[in-house]
Image (cartoon, rainbow, N blue to C red; front, side, top):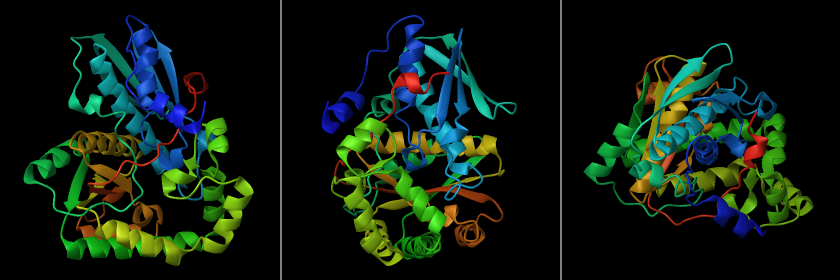
Length: 335
């Protein structure tokens, strides 16, 4: 199939099945969650009445994510999708962090199927790396997004003032300067970019060029274009426009800086992003201020959260639908 056919087949609702078949069906929904660089760093194990979500450390990004924070947040994103899909399939999940595997064990029990607005929005959620349309969020939208972004030991700040958004943009620019100066970061990013539709379809992961606003081109041409056009200055100009066009900036932060809370932060992000999609809003990560460790304390001081760790930074607003990323086959993530 073509890239578009693959994406259209993937990003739609599927039959949830019956009996034990439901477990594979809800894992399929879990794989539609967000992950850093679309690395999909998760593995799933099915047991009677139970699913495990385990980290796949072979898909680490040590340059951009040296402590695996984003990797574990990605597990939390998959967990939230899994729980939403479980309820729709008549399976109520009780998740528990497991220190021995640094994964999550989810025990399920039968319940009345409920298709929530968040479940219905799973195929609609996407990371939209484009300018939004501006305009303020309604009070009810702010209330729902804030409610969705709060979790166990995780809180959310919604930034809406122009002055504060400009300060976020300055923090993002500092992050870009640091990252673009890091050769290992640049090489790692290149390794996860899928420049052409054929490459993206073959790999089923990574960042497809048009998803990031670039044309689909052969890999050699994409690398050549990055060599001459890939710079902190160009990225800062783009990020300033994108942030200025956003209705709000959400920052999720944890009470405790450990894997359990990183997973919970990812779960809160995914729930907030699904709520945004249900409201017809778009979201996109601008994580540079939290990815550069030297900048995190300064960013936390600006936010007024003391010594707590800011986990994720997200733009929110109205905007167009963008090309969608692909996912690996279910067989590749089942263990």
